[in-house]
Image (tube, rainbow, N blue to C red; front, side, top):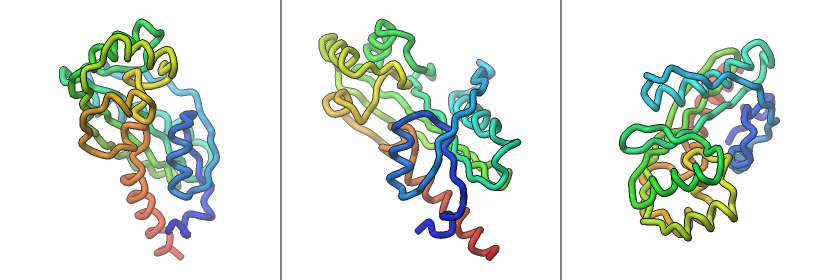
Length: 200
């Protein structure tokens, strides 16, 4: 389906193994290149604007290079009903505090994706609502000890054990919670492929 993108040099600007796996499952061949970027944003921004800003900063780091490549960057945040942004935990204690906060409640996962193609930037975001069953301290500690979720926004990975036993409901795209909304990304890449075909 992506025949018109086959000759494009595709770069995933993310070190996340989960994003790499999801992008591979779309049938695309790509290279992973990560550029260090400043992720400091205006504290007054709304959560959706925060995540879009960070994803765009990651893409902007490639603007002066790889002129003919298609570059994909993304950022994911977890947001409480009170609109507090939950980033990656610094340690086990912080991870426990965050999961205790999410236990038995509903939160939102927002992923922003940027596609840089021919020096043109396209940004979109997807939001998924996730509800946890109440989690016991024993369950939370077991998950943290066994899975070490310090590299995950919101202190958890929905594809892991805690997602199997703790998720009550999900409204929206599942892969968005993992870190890359593949269905929406596929639709955007189809548009690029169709446009490229029209230029041939």
